Every structure is written in C-alpha cells, then in structure tokens.
Length: 367
Image (cartoon, rainbow, N blue to C red; front, side, top):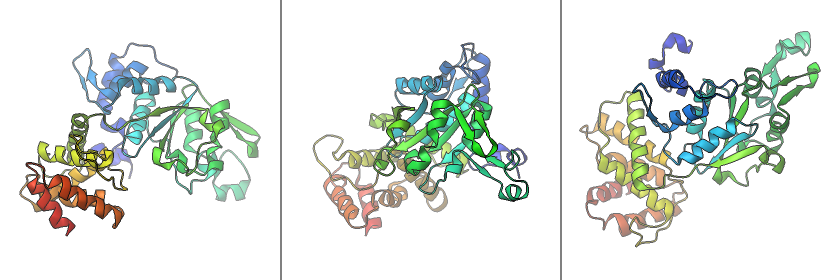
C-alpha cells in the first residue's frame, strides 16, 4: 500500500516534507529571494524553515533545530556551492534530523538516502543490476538499478548518506569522482551520468566513530564540515526535549499526559552532569559512564515515561515513570557503569533538595 493510499495521518513517522508540507508551501509563497538552480526555496527561506520564524502573512514556522544560526547558515550556503556537506558531531546532536529537513526544504524530498553500515556495498553509492534482466539481455539501461546518489544526480537534488565513517573506506572512495567531477561513469554501458544543476550530497558522521573508517584526505577535501554541538545550556536542552517529547507523544497518539517541567529538567540535568563529569553548581566532580547520554536519549527516556504514566500510572508524569528508562540509558556496561551510577545517586541525588522521590525510585529500580 502506498503512502497516498494510507494517508499521512496513518503513518508512524511521516517524512519531513509530509509533516511540514503546509509550512513549506507558505515559505515558497512568501519567498521572493534568489534561489539556486533546482532549489524549492532560497537559502534564506531554508534557514527560516530550520530555525523558525514568522512570515509576512503571519504564518508561524516552527523551529526544527535549536542551535547557533551561523552554523545553519554555513551548512545551507555550502549546499549552494560545489562542495558537499558533512555534518559531524557526537550521537544525539540532531545530525540526521538536520540532514532530513535540509533535504526537504531544498529539493522537496528527503528520501534519497544511503544508510551507512560496515556492510554497505559500492552499489549503494554507484549503481547495481537487476540480475534477471542482466542474464537475459546483458548490460542495458533497463537492467541497471540506480543508487539514491545516481537518482539525485539525474534529478538535480540532494542525496543523503548516513554514518559515512561506518562505510568501508574503499566504498567511501566511490564518492570521490561523483563529488569532484560531478559525474558517475557506467563503464559496462560505455556511458556516464552527469549531475544536473542542484545536485549535492549531505553526509553525517559520528565523532565517536573516529578510527573506524577514517575518510581519506582526498574525500575529506570534497566536504565542508559543520560540527553540530550539544545544547549549550540546560534551559536550551530542556526546551528541545520538551518540544520533541510533545511532538512524539502526539505522533504516537499516547493518551494526553503533560510532560511535567520538573521531571524534564531533572532528566536533562542528570544527563548533562554525567556527560560533563561535574555537577551543575561546579562543586562535585563525577565519573562519566560509557553511554553518550545525548539529548536524543533524554527524549527517549521521557517519551517512555509518558507511556508508562498514561497506561500504567495515574496520568501524571512522576519520578517512578522515568527512573527505569534513566537506568537503562546510563548503564550500558553492567559493571563499570553501575558503579558510576551508584556513586552519582549517593553523592549527588541523595543530597539534592527536592529530589528524594527520584532517589527512591532510582534505588528501587537499581536494586
């Protein structure tokens, strides 16, 4: 069954261009600035779409990303040049999210995606073959199966490559000719695909994957790298988490449970303190667990808490609803991380005013 047949409202996770179709239409109608070839919106409108704002007709554009405006401007400007864009950062810094929304705003589609893994083959970046037709008729245009990158070159649109550094190095290097010459040779057919204007690539990579499959210097030179940071302040992270938890709760059609501000801030503070290795007041140094404890994981913890409260609680988000998910997020190594968590509970949480309910809930789950 196709998306059209099911309807966007019945999809578990619609694409960005489906969810925010009205905002994209309003931006296109109000956008009178120069647009690069094949772009649906001007660079200014793309940045407005990502960061939010009010249009001249009063339409409110919701922020999709909370972070430094200049970083987003650099990323958008890069896509208007002949350089590809590499979004780099630790897990949970919204690299995939930003990549998807950039593609939706620039070319109206975020679906030309290559998911990088250790098993990603060169065909995922270049092209493959329909082997039944290949055996029946030999190499032909009909037997060729284009990759998302080849399709983007044909259309003059953006291709997305997730987790670039997880792809084997020899497969990564298939991008060099594509990015430098803007062409993809097909020697079996004695031809090539030349990129239409508007083509570019957005890749994401995890800071913690350094040393897995490092990019060659030749490939790295073809990218302009933008590092997406973690939220700078606790208030900023609380705002991000609150908004995304509300959006996810609505998308999952969870029974209405308000995301209690105190519990959101508590989870965010726990994650920030363990992540940074020091308490918010700067008085106590802490050991950090092996887990990333990213903003994305905080969102997951609180969404899980909302589900627990809605289905098995009293409809009010409480410490007991999030304690189990916090424990699962922090303790990845059952030995070393358990020690870190116990020390944090006893040295920080137990002594913190107003946190006794959270302390008791976490001790009960931990024991």
